[in-house]
Amino acid sequence: MKPVYVDNNATTKVAPEIVEAMLPFYTEMYGNPSSMHTFGGQVASHIEKARKQVASLLGALPEEIIFTSCGTESDGAAIRSALHTQPTKNHIITTMVEHPAIKTLCETLSKHGFRITTVPVDNRGRLDMDFLTKNLTDDTAIVSVMWANNETGTIFPVEEIAELCSQKGILFHTDAVQAVGKIDMDLSKTKIDMLSLSGHKLHAPKGIGALYVRKGTKFTPFMIGGHQEKGKRAGTENVASIVALGRACDFARESMEKENTYVKMLRDKLETTLTTIIPKAVANGDLDNRLPNTSSISFEFIEGEAILLMMNELGICASSGSACTSGSLEPSHVLRAMGVPYTAAHGTIRFSLSIYNTEEEIDFIIEKLPPIIKRLRSISPYWDKSWDF
Image 1 (cartoon, rainbow, N blue to C red):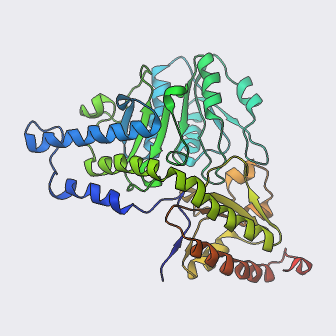
Image 2 (cartoon, rainbow, N blue to C red; image 1 turned 90 degrees about the vertical axis):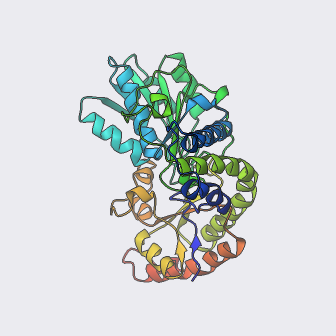
């Protein structure tokens, strides 16, 4: 059974052309880029080419890109550097809907004396900008706001927030893991100081990420050791994956129009049809301002895990929220922050598409999901049979 994969915010298929770009660095050019001999040293030029490719997608300078192992490492390196380089400041502002990479880090830092302010959102997942602005203080070391939410796709006004922070001399970081490759970016025209991205969200393999650090921003490395990445991130470079990330950034730019037309069309067809034919089904997030591939739909009075298991039997791969919080029986902190009732938050499914999805796959989901919902509701003690469809 060929899977119908609509869980691309968790991870993406590695594009065949990206695999092809990687392979020589496992079999032919496997030298250490720091070696003095030509066999190893020649590899370094491919790392620099990848750095230029990443920088080009972001509208950044190559020297502003640091390769890391993943988005979580990039996030942690950004926040910790901001604290280390500004020892007199102990305040961090973030949001109530961040990915666990930021949320859990801030919760940990709060136990070590740092003051954390979390900005609330409204019922469409939009930030309370007045709250954020009022809480910018002299001891604020950094503001970290994700560019787009991983569960609902809601896009946040990070360029506006970065400008506010800049006016007050406060560093601004954004976790752009879900946004890079789906939204046009030109960091040279913004006041964003640091930005995190992850390769496996844009058809590169897992285990590679990058951190953008604006030229002139004080930075202390998270990983200490060798001289790699000009002393900003120690450890022998993951050359094949770095090359893959560079190629993935070119691939993302080549695919961006398709992402915002074809993928968006598929997403809208899926969402509109399901919320029309299934009663008590509601799409979550800012529907007018979100990523083109993401749809979060709550099916009231049933459990999302049960929906996922029954879809899984048919080969449909989706999720109930962030893959990094799967396994928890608690409803999504993102949906709770938006005020989504428990009866709906528990029954929420995230569909996240990619350019590899087909209209036939979307039609398959539209055919198979309504009977699943109907069957689960027939055994739900909270479902009123007069609502049946």
